Image (cartoon, rainbow, N blue to C red):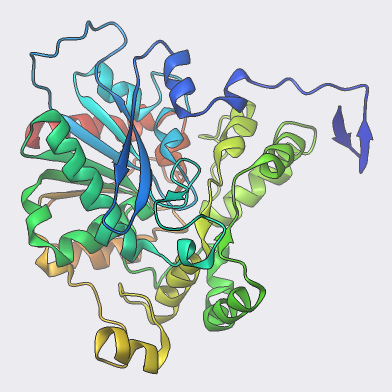
Length: 389
């Protein structure tokens, strides 16, 4: 059945793409690639699911040959699906595997694939008491150390998108050890300070403190969770006659770009995204929109004194980053605004590359969903990896 004109229409059947109901490993296998799954335990008890594409589609497994290792880290409200959601020639995970890299796909706490903790269930408030700061303190170090141990390598290359860059900027600002474990950090749609954000999120930001209070009062700790309801909504709104509504909601938050969105797969994208996040993560970003600073979570004056020994949250010192960093950004990105990218450029001491995508309308999600991202973005990624990894 389908939804039309406000009524269920039993005469029209949805033409569901097979990828609609596939998890990330099934997406990889369905395209003819080998996949391995691992579980990583963080120091605070979270169990993170990560996937590995150890070799390309037409390549024979050779365990004796050491390969260059790449870790791909998704953004806010996303999961590792992002890197393999399109067809092989358009998806960075597949492209890297076919170019000889040992590809690992990370998942942060709280998303579709990482909703377990050995100390408490995901139904309690304590499980969701995190933002990107905890991802920087626990998730990224655990994944990096696990991968380096598994591969026998001393370093890996890291490619993050959106919040996947935020958490890495935070980690490298505070932990010099992990600067040494990266041979290159490629930031796609980089997000640190977000003072110039043009997304609709900016209208919510002034109410960050009220939102935090409201969420705590009503006991809502997970933001836009994945599940059957989201699957149904994605099928109704993104695979039917009212698909333009779904497209425009995406454009409202990320920037308008009809040229790069494969509308025929919109239902597939939305069936995997949003993949869940904590409400604290959303409040943290809203706080930074207000402060125009790249800083830790603001607990209020008294809470900050207890946690940070100062009344305001500390800023992350980007000048401390010594790892090589490359920035790939877009002029039409409403979440990673060019003005905020310029702020990053001015504070990174080992910035080796910064380039806007050569398409004016390219937006925030086009870095992972864009039909021409392979040409507009991933060719630069391959060149950077070849030169610096």
